[in-house]
Each structure stands twice: as C-alpha cells, then as structure tokens.
Image (cartoon, rainbow, N blue to C red; front, side, top):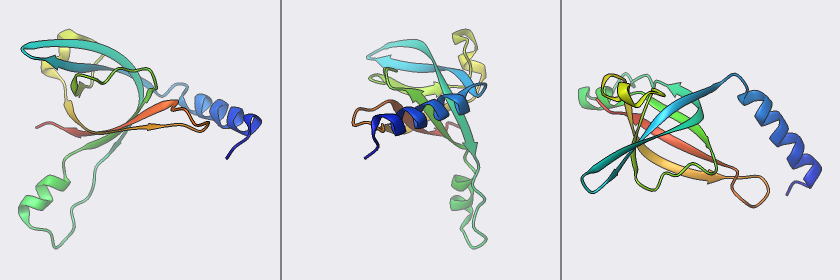
Length: 124
C-alpha cells in the first residue's frame, strides 16, 4: 500500500500526463423511451487489433473492430449510459462514431476509486 506522499506523487504525475490529452465525449443515456445526452471529459486511447493469420473470416472481422480505453473522472454518472459518441456536441451524435460500453472498472490508489476506466467497442 502506498503512503500519502507516494499516492500524491503518483496522482500528480497522472494529472500531468493527462494534461493536453483530454477529449470531450457525449454519453448517450436511455431511460425507457427517453434518450438524453451528457458530456464528459476523458483520456482516449484507441487500439486496433490485427487479426490472427489463421483466424476465420468472421473472427477477423470481429478483431478489426476498434476498441477504445477511456479514463473518466470518478464522478461521471454511467447509470443509464448505453453508448459513447466521439463528439462534444450532441447535435453531431448521429454523424460521428459511437461506441458500446463493454466494461466499466472503478480504480484507485488510496482505497477509494479516483477514476473509471471504460472499455468501449465501436458500433458498426
């Protein structure tokens, strides 16, 4: 376990690394028949997997789907979120790439979560 000084040092370095790498995205939230939008800032890392040489055609197509790892602040509300749109403007949601939320993990150094790491899969 880290002591306070070590945790503060790690958190300061993480904040320094995030500086200039933040992206504003739109969370698409559905409650019954109602769709609402909320913006949130995150760091965004896109990774495209190369398909294995011996993989079947369907497996290769699935592996080419873009996955994104996005890190959000701990206070972002994902309770009704079903997708994330790669735009800060809700009027542009229909025209931009959208991602299904595959996994949300709350992480932290000091016992309490201080960030949410989301794994997102592109919706085709």
